[in-house]
Length: 103
Image (tube, rainbow, N blue to C red; front, side, top):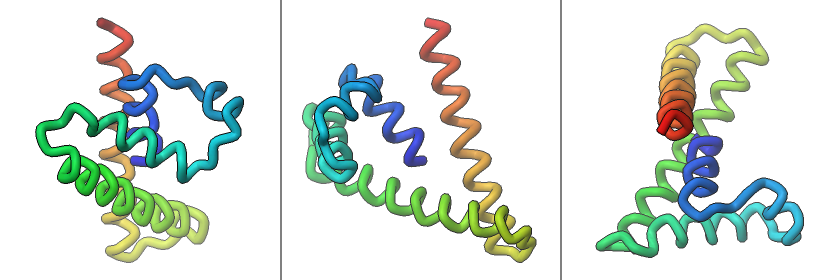
């Protein structure tokens, strides 16, 4: 999801990875700036920021779980659910990027 959020933020604001590295901006500052830019024209920017930040947190936690499960070849229920969620989010990201580039 982090990849998705940053990708969407890049598309919405026109930022590139080189722009981030050349500014010397911290990852946190970049994230806050992208969330604010993404939500600035939303009818309820505060709610938008809350939703984006919470989805990002959930996705980050899931990504950590996913990689721990993959690294240690775990197969319990939490891992299977984490893998399913990660694969879904990654699939949606890939689909959205294909859709954007085909337009």
